[in-house]
Image (cartoon, rainbow, N blue to C red):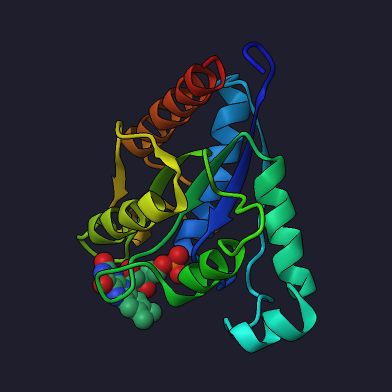
Length: 191
Ligand code: FNR
């Protein structure tokens, strides 16, 4: 893995078609390609994961969408969360998906490096969400990329009408974080 492409699972925290965060993840995938950052992406879809119910898990095991998500996490070298902030925290859909995936056996997030970026409608840039996600990742035993952080503000000013990322400084910030995630993943895998 030291020289191969890093396999990244992109996990969007918003389900809506017009999501700025889904658009930011698409932009990250394009930037990795154009900047020749050695990573390949799979994008997780978490919208069909049911609400967490331990009775369901105990009676029938993991629902199929959860098994799919767990397998995607297990197969990835690193995870990239791209999420909005809801009520100063991690959106429920993302937390719900994490809660399902985190159950034993073989908790798939354990020992995975991850990065987080996000775009907000207004000024926050998703800072509070990111710090709550980092706290969650402690229990998951993941390895956060500390820097660079990517806080994208005022979504409507950085994307065009087709949700293409047009803001130069944001593109540069994304490229830097992706490169750092590759280095971080390689460093951890060399242990
Ligand atoms: C928000 N929004 C929001 N923004 C923010 O910066 N801090 C916050 O705490 C919240 N809280 C919040 C709660 C809920 C339930 C919604 C629906 C929205 C606004 C949010 O940044 C904006 O809607 C983004 O555009 C959502 O991301 P996507 O869906 O465009 O990716």
